[in-house]
View (cartoon, rainbow, N blue to C red):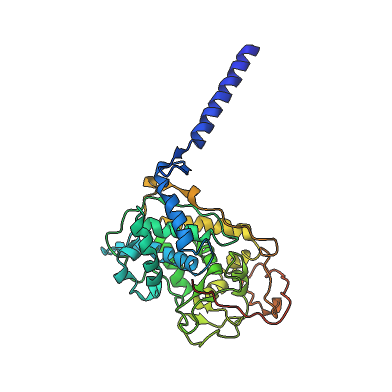
Length: 368
């Protein structure tokens, strides 16, 4: 009996070793340096190294990262089953159409300024064996990995080239109502209100160039170099000023000199359907990371057949971790809980410390 038990145990160990070997087996890439779990991912090593050095300035969470993520969203959201149901082409989502049909799509009002990052990215697509749809989403995932506090995003390879431009009016605008924005996301991919809020975590590393063209590079929070929760704090503060000219479509007053607030962000932060979810991200870095990662993965494959795609997520670098101080939300100097416009009806806004010193003024994001 003892020998029988020993034989069974050895068989289980052998089976486990085989299974683990199957899970961890890697293939050598043609470059003679890297290995991958799937040979299809090998070509991405060169793409990653190229864009980190030559698009993202050596791996900096800067303007090109912000613009690359904006491009990934504007390309992916270009799909509408509601339009398709009328017999008109409704787009195929994350398909690279914004680059393939640049002259058409960058002329849409919602895509003002996107032509600049499209033109920056085109040479990388030309020198690597990758479709525009794959490149746009890959560049966004790699770029965000340069931002401390960001999640390590997934990337799936295998988007075929778009055959037609996406229809106009599929990209939400900052002057759209909450009803319109939530309906647009629901139509595009069945996104819930909570998932819309999660995607807007990207605004913590974002800046506006064209809302007020007199002040390009104006960030949406006081820490645009960090993927943290300050955006969710500062959008709840009472607006008192315009950082530039004021009166621009899609802009409302912000609480800080040098900080721009989009009308859509302000209204989503205060709407009963989204306010509590919005507030829940304050000082909750783990939730920001997990929710944003899941929502971005859903966005990045809109319109695609994921069963025909290859998981190359291992190519995405692990982002730097925030320090304990950086991951703790705080009020900018001169502001307190008394300046919060409480919107969540069920949970009080957290009590936060205030930065010392004179009133905070936010510097613009420098150009590359």
